[in-house]
Length: 374
Image (cartoon, rainbow, N blue to C red; front, top):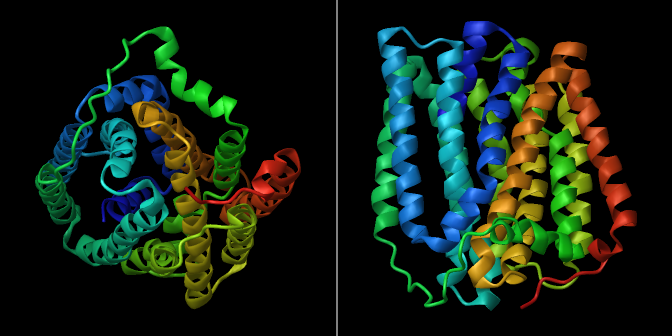
């Protein structure tokens, strides 16, 4: 809901594709700046408390969006500044939340658990954008106010989660400790190939930043159409996540992952050239299904291959790659759209993703043969 509101409000204020790309950039900056710190926080503090605090911080930021919209002083720079604060909160939340999950389920059940958690998240991503598009008709203040209340509710629900903290001695915060998560990934060649593949593939395939342009200028719809476009990838992802909860990926996870990346690129190309809303929705649904497949495999493998005492720092490095790809991908798409137009920008991203998958398959042969079994 928040993403739909911010995207439509910014495009209405500025009419600029580059500004839509800046939404990703201002979230990317705190993610990079805080990476080394957030991993330490996730490993040294109560991970549940970290997540609760971040939810409350996001509630405050969204409430500021509501108040600024109500009073009429919220302009482009103010929105971007608040988005940066929200990005900082998510930078702390994501590693702590990811590292918390292996303490709640047996390691052998982790792929199924990741798929189940993702299924719930994708359901929200279906309902949220569609509902956000409808609620925006009542004004951005109403939309942001409801989102802020939901953040508070989320914080209360997460506070009820109970998990046994391990008694492991927490390492001192040294230079080696700060960089240990990144060093661990560099040493594990399979993880390095996996995360770098996601980084560059999604960096090139960031078409979702341009959805407000496609909705208004190419497909001729309003906020409701933008809501449907936002929800379409989540619909495809939800179907995939439900399947994976029943039939988790085990053997031949590598070829399945690579195939998913290729399908992601092909779906991006189809979306780029589509001028019909049904075809665009179908392409985005396939895109979301393929992306979810790689997300579940990647998250499961990272958690299964990482010792619990290091999961916060490794998850922080993982979040850096995924955050970088998503947020810089939005900026890249906005910049290319400003230079060459939105269709050319998405086409470049789609074909680029396919090329990246082929190159990485040759550069990291480990990606072709790993399994996902405890």
